[in-house]
Amino acid sequence: MKKIALFLLVCAFTVMSAAAYEMKGSYYFGPYVGYKIFDDKSDFENDVEAGIKLGYFITEHWAAELSGGFVDAEYDSTNKSEDIFTPGLHALYHFRPSMDRGLLPFLQAGIEARVADDTDTGLALGGGLKYLFTKNFAGDVSYKNIYYGEGKHDQLVALSVAYFFGVKEKIADKPVPAPVAAVKEEPAPAPAAVEEKKEEAVAVIAPVDTDGDGVYDDQDLCPGTPAEFSVNEKGCFKSMKLLVNFANNSDVIDAASMNKVQEFADFMKATPVLKVEIQGHTDSKGSEAYNQKLSEKRAKAVGAELIRLGIEADRVQTKGYGESNPVASNDTVEGRAANRRIEAVALDEDGTRVQSQKPE
Image 1 (spheres, rainbow, N blue to C red):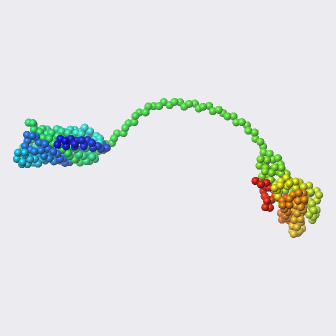
Image 2 (cartoon, one colour; image 1 turned 90 degrees about the horizontal axis):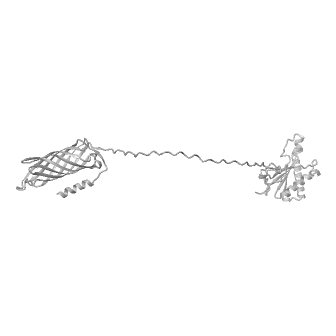
Image 3 (cartoon, one colour; image 1 turned 30 degrees about the vertical axis):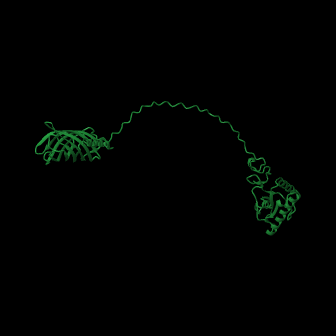
């Protein structure tokens, strides 16, 4: 029997809970069952005792408990049985009042009676372990020895369960952080001296247009183009007005205009990729049909002269535009003179007008 009691005590110690409880003001009740060991001087056989108990926590440490048990005991000598009642009033002292982990060792002392044919009253001393599985449900294992005087005493090893009312979960105190030593701030180092860099003067070179065609040399793909030529954005020949004079109603180039045709032929020789369209234009005097034919004849005359001066025939095309493309008013003498003109316009390889005669 002692081994069983020891085993129960060990089990109670090994079962742990993570909860913490406050017990003051709570009360409980529940049944218990145990093994009653009667005094050798009595005539009762050891037997099972069952009962009920009611308790109240006066403080976190102290509780008062009222109990009442029953044993159906048999006499050794006669094998007759007798009902024995064991009322008691006990004071319990608990060593872990905060109920940390739910485990609560205790000691108890009180008065307990054995009521049968005769009534014996004695001093009950003992202890045990109480364990709260939840804040409302607990179990305990206990041992007590009841001294009746004259060398008589009974013993009880018991297990009980109880239902609790008014138990509060304890709020754990927050840990106080350790003081942090003040850190003396070192003065910030002085900023390193920044060496000032002296900006060197950069000479700005003004853009140059050597050939005077309106396109600077660093962008001019056709340097040396005469200033009187109309050029594209890359400085290459686009068109020009040839100052060629013809006699009235004639397509024969006069001697004074031959120098202009020669200059243009020299330019084409220096630019072998250049192909041109020689365009003939008239003013509005005369019929439109007549002016158209006259412009064609004059364009062919200039084209033929360029070929005679050494320009390949496949590089020269001619076309008459008659009076259809005036550049000035035909209502004035000056305007009509401006409209009677020969123009040379650059072409690409398939005969259409181009922006640059040099391949990219």
